[in-house]
Image 1 (cartoon, helix red, strand yellow):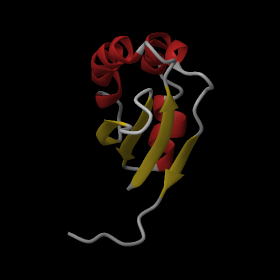
Image 2: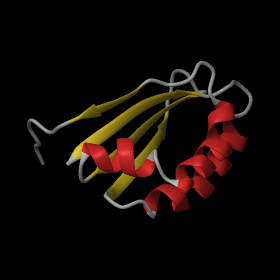
Image 3: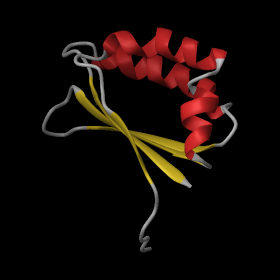
Length: 99
């Protein structure tokens, strides 16, 4: 399993619109092969900041499968215009889990 992490800096004042668009976009990513689950959290200290965590079966499921799919083009259309600056996306492999 791989966890994708992205800190999403949403343009201030567009948070509600972003959350609505993101809710619609979840149908796209959840249909991707290798998708396991995701969570979207809003920052308490910076209300226009969000943390996206997505679990994938493999790194390639995200970087090649999803990003190379027609669904990703729709994902981009729905969400990418909300970010300023564009987020950095990183991938993590599990080392230790408790609980």
